[in-house]
Image 1 (spheres, rainbow, N blue to C red):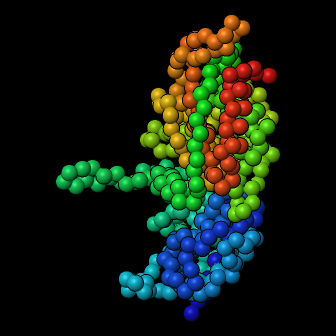
Image 2 (cartoon, rainbow, N blue to C red; image 1 turned 90 degrees about the horizontal axis):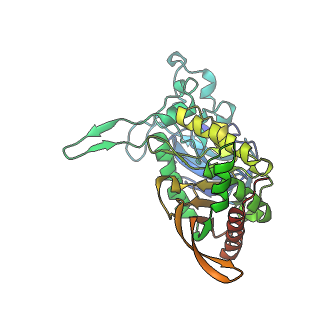
Image 3 (cartoon, rainbow, N blue to C red; image 1 turned 180 degrees about the vertical axis):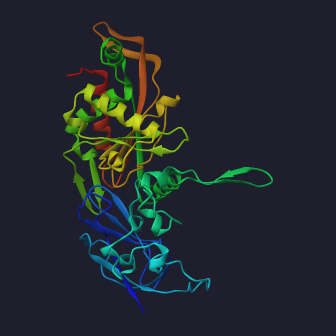
Length: 381
C-alpha cells in the first residue's frame, strides 16, 4: 500500500509560516483527489490544502491551532485505486506512465518534491484546476484557466451558464466568509464638496476612488487596528497599507487588484497606480502579484448608482471592507456663527463592515468618524 505525505507547499504565496486553522477531513476519512482537506492561514492569505491523490487519511500529524512550517508534513494519505462509495476507479493523475507525456518525478510518493501548482491554492483568488490534466498545467497560466467561461447548455425552459473558475472561487469565498466571520456594518454620511472642488481645479485628474483611498490611508495611520489580519486568536497589524479595490469586469466577474503602500504615496501616485490596475483588469493583463498582499478592501458600488450596500469581508483574513455609495446632492445642516442653516451639498454614504471578532463597534465608529473628517476637510499634500 502506497502512502503520500500531505504538505503545505510555499510556491503559492509569500513564504511565511502559518496556522492550521481547520481540518475539513478527519482521520480515516476517504478523500478524492482535489478535495479540500485543511485550511491554513498565514499573515497575508488563507489557503486550502488540496489532496493530491484519492485515499484514506491514515494519520494527522498537525492539529488545528498549531503552527505550520512550510513544506512540513501535516498528514499522510493511504492511496487507493477504487472509490469505496461508488466502486469506481479513482482518478489519481500521479498514476500515469511516462509515455503519457508526464515527467516521472510527478509519481514520487512525496508530493512536496514536485507538486502541481493546483494542489495548494490561495482561496482568495485562484481556484484549483478541477479536471485539468497535470500534463497541461505547465503550459496553461493560472489566470488563463481562471478567465475561461464555462460552456452553456439549454433545456426546455432556460439557458444555463456554468460559473467560470473565478465566479466559482468568489462564491466559495463568500460562503466561507459568511460561515466563519461575524459581520457588523456601520454607515456614515460625508460631504465631498472639497474633493469635488479639488477634482475640478486640479490639472492632474484623479477618480473619486483615488481620493477616497488617499483619505482612507490617512485614517488608517491613526487607527491601525482596522488595517490588520486575524489569524487564529492573534491580530496581526500591518505597517504597510495595501488597499484592494473590488473591480467588476465586463462579464460581471469580480476581481480585487491591490494598490501597494498607499500610506507612502501622494494622491497623484495613487491615481496612477489605480489607473494601471484598472487597465490591466480590462485588458486581461492582471498578474497574480497584482492581487496579492492586500490588507484592507474598498468596494465603490456607487459607480453603478447604489447609495447603500453591506459588502462582506471578501478577502479573509482581512478584518474590514469599506463601501462607497454614489454622490448625490442632498440638504445638509451647516453650523455658522448665526446658528444652523440648510444648504445643498454633494454627499456620499460610506460603510464599514468588520469582523466583529477582531474589531468592536466602538472602534469602528471612531475610525469612520475620523475618515469622514478627512473626507470633508480634504486637502491634498
